[in-house]
Length: 176
Image 1 (cartoon, rainbow, N blue to C red):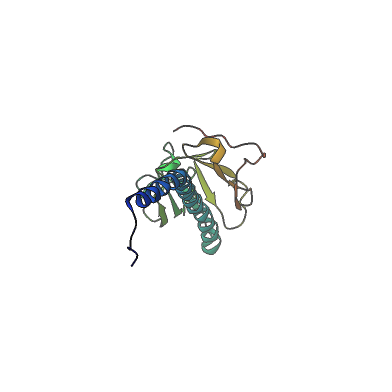
Image 2 (cartoon, helix red, strand yellow):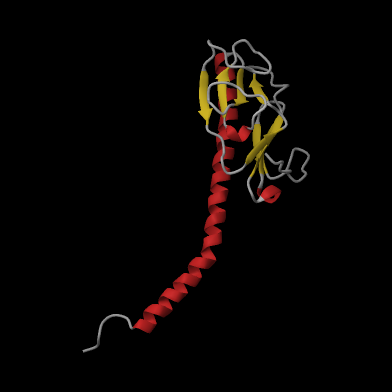
């Protein structure tokens, strides 16, 4: 009768091979996690643009997106990475401010794993013309420009995701 199980040498050899394979795979898992975090945040902002654009048309009024770390008021000096809100901007103020009679449609928590920079402090969508809404929002993590993504909003209010800026140049990551 043949003995069942593994010898100590077979077990140690198997564990050594498993350890080597795991050490090779760990950086790939970390990269995958960073990509997933960045993609989630880019998709959330992309969703915010579509929400604001469609609600402006549906409501026949201005709907704005602004930076907000508390989810209740607009901040014109803070960072987009701290969060943003989409709200009905009934009085069409510029820069937009949430007033008592204006509805906050959605609150976004922001991104704690990187920076979000834009060439605009806010975006206001109108039901007909979008001439003043174009802009670029750049999402960067510790990997820098090489792995940055941008949402580019056209003058018609249509967003697109890109690895390059609106002039087809590499994205630049600003600190802070």
